[in-house]
Image (tube, rainbow, N blue to C red; front, side):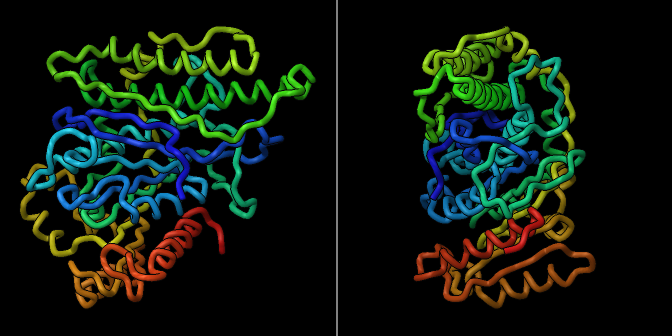
Length: 409
């Protein structure tokens, strides 16, 4: 099972500023009861998109949660979001899926910037922070056999996943480097700027929380807090987004409101643990300015996870998109052959026949140089309600993620 979200918040969609529900689940850092941290944490994260909203799909879907939990166990930051029309997100489901693609793009932009922000182990001024710099020590509570990814020069490891309708949208996403170009240079008042600010502020809060507890551990080590008990509770925070009309958005006001939450949380933690503030925290104005500064993030090492994609709609979507959209969106089959991809489906799916799934999957896997893999879950329908099939689905995902991490078993 997944723990409580580390952060629950909203972001505006880059399509039309529609408010989107979002959650982030960080790996537990166990700062309070950890001793020494020897391994370097390579930034790695996964996003799982949910099924069709009009049929009840949202980020609380059971298959979405199962997949997310399995990946989270492997030391990944996991993010989920509600497309427009799902849960408490604004708007309604579209007919042609272009808005939903842009919703996914919005969360990818947030998520990559957020995880890159976790490279820093302590709060620093924006002028000192460099995206793509050497990863910081990341305390871990995971199996010691799960060795960290060694490279410090490559971009973060990113799994873009989706189930059912979410997998369909995933196939038609632009490449991550194309997505990140939209967030490289942003103007104040735009959705892209608000998304980057939310990523910067939440990453700063997580880093500051970690620093507070490292300070507490050090204080206890020298005997000044001998009675302080360690705690493993997650520091879950709910934070709203900019829900004003696009024409009346006030970025500076919204930015300060977000950063005030960060500052109050940090100050409360210091008071609770009896720690003094030393030095100065990152000025809110400087962090706001950072969110508008041009930055280039190393392209992620991207992998795709497709759970029971709706093949009957894949071809239809391609014909519905305009030529301008297709020009910026790599053909789905090309993308999932070039990048490491796992497709998992059941042989009793009511939306796509076993014969069609096999023909599609075997054809992609057989292409020269293909990095496409597939697993067929015997006895599984589209919703994975049958006895034992969810366990098999999780096993397939777990083994594939361990391959990504360079691990066995």
